[in-house]
Image 1: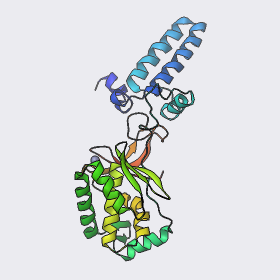
Image 2: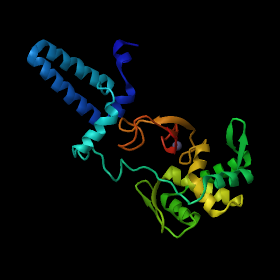
Image 3: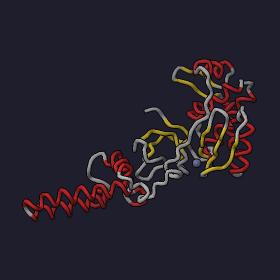
Length: 263
Ligand SMILES: [Zn+2]
């Protein structure tokens, strides 16, 4: 490995390069170099060259840049310039919710044998998992339109459901949410599979998000789901406002976020 390679941070460069981070850092370096250059030109030049090389190889040099640069760009009204489209890039999958006590939900899932409590935590029962994953496999073969139709039959309320922005928009009387395709597939499969177990509709709905914690196979592509971090502005899968190192369960193959872990 060469010195250049060891300095490189591929997670912040190349395809993953964050434009706001690069621009903001270059500007900071230019200002510092100029200020030092007034005192003594060679020092200014050294700062300029070293800074530029560092930004090129490492994505950014000022600590914390991925956290503040996108916000700075947004605050300066330049988000459009950097291609952040409010409708697309910032879109974060939302969850179906139901007004139900989480303890009631948990005890219902435990009593029905969907979840099993072991010494080291909660697990999904194997036979439940089989049917659940099979349903996801069937759903992923369908088109967005077919998925939207299935969502509208699965949710226990009248809703206007349609494909939107590579996902599914659900417009109901008490709830208006957008879900990524992966999470919509997961949640519909959860509702159907819990229905098979005789779980009441309100519990099924409330359980959709927590059940995603137990997913091992990507609802969208069938790849392996693993614990990882979303590097938001620098590559990554999520929006502009997220913590750059937000822990999630996501697909190793297609990057679909399945569940956001608490920090
Ligand atoms: Zn996937």
